[in-house]
Length: 172
Picture 1 (cartoon, helix red, strand yellow):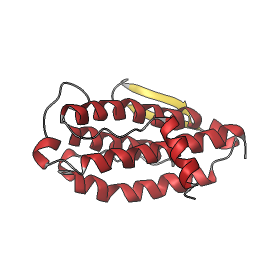
Picture 2 (cartoon, one colour; picture 1 turned 180 degrees about the vertical axis):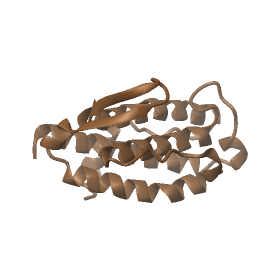
Picture 3 (tube, one colour; picture 1 turned 90 degrees about the vertical axis):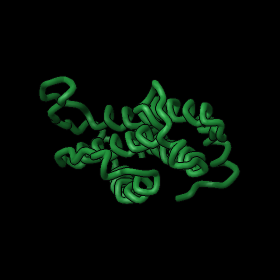
Picture 4 (cartoon, helix red, strand yellow; picture 1 turned 30 degrees about the vertical axis):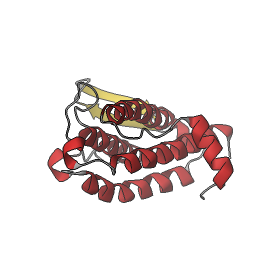
């Protein structure tokens, strides 16, 4: 396995680990707390977590060559519904990352962008890195929301992940 593929897989392992830590903290909150408005992220912790899910869904669609399905807020009205939707996306990500090769990193993905107002091309490696950096950015917003709500903020940095991994051993 190439070093680039190994690193990308590790980045995605961290994404899952930190996401699970975020969800564990969010589960301690009431529905009212999850819907508390903030002037950051997607305005509430629930919508911010749903946004993480939606981004993962949109980008795995792109990597697999499917049209973006998008995520409708009404289909994810609470944390339980977001968590119930995630395993199917996780399975697709796991299969994609398991089959990832150095050559596939250069795959060209063509998409239409509502934000850009045009069609664009992006390399698979850029998507794979973007999903993780977007996750970290959004995770920081969610962590700030958790802090403001007065609940435990999980330690989700890569150093914490690496220490946890060494203590518990790899999961796969």
